[in-house]
Length: 171
Image (cartoon, rainbow, N blue to C red; front, side):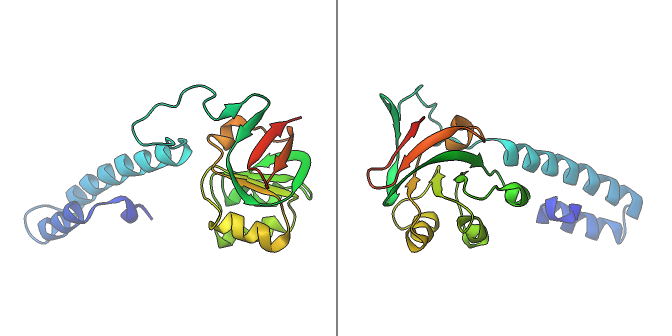
C-alpha cells in the first residue's frame, strides 16, 4: 500500500533507472524512503485538527457568547443529552444510542449514526450540508459550524443543542 505515498516523478524515475543504470534494490530503497516520509506526513495531518481559517490562530472563546456557543442553525428543535465525539469511522461501533453526535463533518457514510443520535453538532457545514439535511429529514436538532467542537466537547459531557437558533449550551 505504500505505493500510494510515492509521488509520480520519483516512481517514474526509479522504474526507468531500474531498467538500466541502477539495481532494483537501489530503486526500492529510494522509493521506500520517499513512501515513509510521505506516509508520516499524512498520518500527522490526519490527527491534527485543521485551522478554522487557514493561517489564522483562533482567539480564545471567540465563538462563545455568555452561557452558550454559537454556530449555524442546521435543523430546528432542542435536545439535552450527552455528547459523543466521533473522529472517524473507527468510532462508529462505539456510538451509544441517544447520544448527541459531535463530528468535524459528516457524509453519507455517517448516516447510520443519525438513526441512533438525538442531536448533531459539527465543526463545518451550513443549512445545506449533509449533516443539516439528514438531521432535518430525521427530525434531529442540529447546529453546524461550531468551531473546535471535537476538541471543545468531551464524550459524556451534557449539553443542550438548540437547532432553531444555532446554539449549544453546556449543562
